Structure formats: C-alpha cells, structure tokens
Length: 145
Image (cartoon, rainbow, N blue to C red):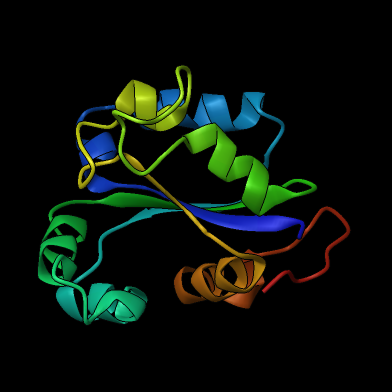
C-alpha cells in the first residue's frame, strides 16, 4: 500500500520529541499527507482501540492515550506499512533495533512513543478515524481515505 497511519503518542509529545520524530519520518522517505495534534477522550480512544477491548491492558491503554495530546499522521510511501514498522522498531523498546524511533524515544512497552498501522486495511481505517476525507489528498489531489 501507499499509505500508513501513525500517532506520536502522548509520552513522546510531552517529552518534546515530536520534531525529532517528524524529522526521522521525513528522512526515511515518507511524505506527510495529513497531520494534526489532538487529544482523545475515553470514548474516542475506546472506539479507536476496540480490537483490543478483551485484552487485559485495554483500560491502561485508554488511560495512557487520553493522558495528553498526540499527533496523528497519514504518511505516503511505497510499501508504507512495512517500511514504517521497520522505522519505528519493536513494540518493546528493549527489543527495538538501534536507531529506530522506539529505540531512541520510547520509555517502555506501554509508553512506546509511536503507533504504526499493522496492515493496509488498518491504515485506511485508522486514518479515516482521525481525518476527514478532505484532509487526505495525495499529490495528484486524489482522496486517500
């Protein structure tokens, strides 16, 4: 796929890492299609993460993601989902490869600095959740949502 969705999570925003993370994303060849800083309430966070609602960590995840502002991003590049997941590194920063975003900026497995979609289908679903169609245009003016 050509697009992926990412969030710079509240921990990284609070710690002042937004600019450095955006630079790494740009330097890795991703084009920022859409971007905004926002804040989720519990209802929105629960809806966004509904695939995890049966998991033991669900409430902790909601509490964390609503703890402060985050930055939502729609990114464009060939092979976007896979390439972005390589750039951010493993969910657990202890296991994340050197030089990856999580290796550099994540505090722990929960406060892990960034989110990246795990499939093309989820990239579209997640991007559409945070951005209206009008906000997501490619360089030719075609709506990507």
